[in-house]
Length: 569
Image 1 (cartoon, helix red, strand yellow):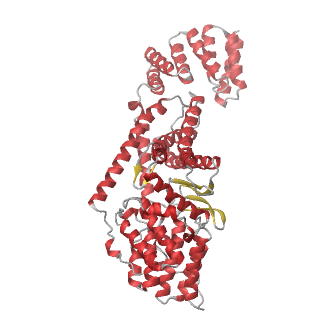
Image 2 (image 1 turned 135 degrees about the vertical axis):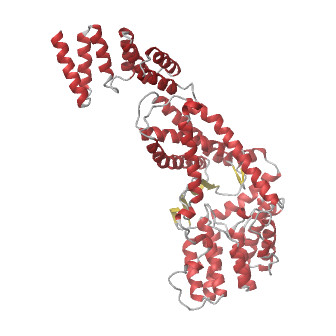
Image 3 (image 1 turned 45 degrees about the vertical axis):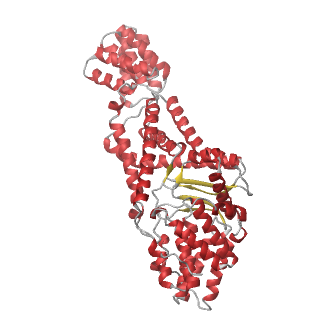
């Protein structure tokens, strides 16, 4: 019943072939995502949207660092809610959902919300729902997978629609920047889910939909494995796993994830039935298949199972510890809590072998507490039995209060926040820098945009080049007929040239679009009426200005102007 595999067979460095494969996957995935964003960005950024004033570069940088993660978190949450809604519509059972570092799960002890590990700078998400019985459920699975990208597309369309509804209106800087980042985060998220590709060992939603659509032997093997995992989540213990589904996964190609996970499930099934020799054989085959995986994608649970089997049945403490040392802290794992529970059970077995009976019992208690928070309901009776065996073997000794930090499993060791979040911060900073560069280079990237033509007109207006200003404002209005600021500014230019009736026509147009939004527009029209000699119309505009509760300076100016005009009249 001894394992033939050795910890020394697992190196920390990927093979040249693995590095090449990973490099090409990352390159291809990046090219596809960037290409899609390049196609989408001009379309959404050229669309009409509200105007907002940027106080300064410093304010832009600071507020972007605050609003960008909020916008991305909202986008990820919206995407996962799309999966959940689709799952509810097809009658699947909720297991858990993650929004960045947050996890809401239906655990053994009930519904609970928790944080994933110590890395708070995470914007990944995952929704897991399972059917209530064995079956193909291919159409239902495609509906669930499509729910996320459809929700993201809907977010994109909603923000574009909201921007269009607020077009040419002046809104607060914070709201304007938040709308912009919500738009850009949807543009970034959509290619990452709606474009079929494989990044590492993860397929995008659309890639998985296409797999289900095409069918074939590989899909049957994948569905067999999915049914086994779903059965465990519903509460089926390893010993009661369906033999037909298990045989299908064991027949999968050796380089597939189905073969790897299928052999591990067979190991757990044999162990649950008490056949330790068969369990060792299946675990050896699992470890042999695991060697083909890059170091960063090797499962901590498989290494922990090797450590447990060696400690429990071979009673080789050094070899068991060597297996545990192969486990590396993970950047992100939606099932991190379940992994920690298994690692604590394995640690308890090693402490028992080392004669640390009180510490072994403490590890058992901690593992059992985590077991109540597990979503893998089928593993609960299996894990409980193994933990009870360790507890009984430890005798009558009393447990200590808690495990020393050095004896905590690798994944449970608390890393400093900065170190744990370094990669997330770097990604965050890079995306923010790209966004800022996009903002600073706006006029160069999109020279034909209405806002750019308007700004050029303002520059001409400030320089006293009124005819050039009018031409620039004409271009802006041609691009966006509802651009009230451009119409207003063109009226100012006509007023400066003495074209009073034309100026009044532009001011009338602004007031028609926004009767009460811009009180000072009445000041400009009143000035034009005054120069035309139409004092009653000018007085009426000043009185309208007063009715809109302007600031004190405008109020005094209006009162003085009314007095002067009434005297002149």
